[in-house]
Length: 99
Image (cartoon, rainbow, N blue to C red):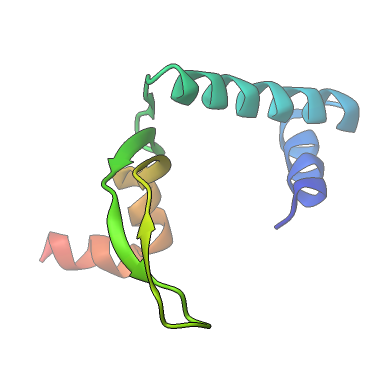
């Protein structure tokens, strides 16, 4: 699903106009981005958590020249799916727990 399809789906499910759905999605993405930039995490119970993780500097290799290179440390955004989302995507997983 791309952004246009997402806007269409949100508009249909929430009885918003496409323009209002686009604004809502844009505002949500801006809020999540700003929170991550500030070092906060965004936790949506049941859906998942957006946060940043520090990635250590490491050695790598240039695939063209095979020369060793140093890959700098970085802060990376990550998303961890919540239980309800995992169960919705993998219904058989939920069935196995009940046994």
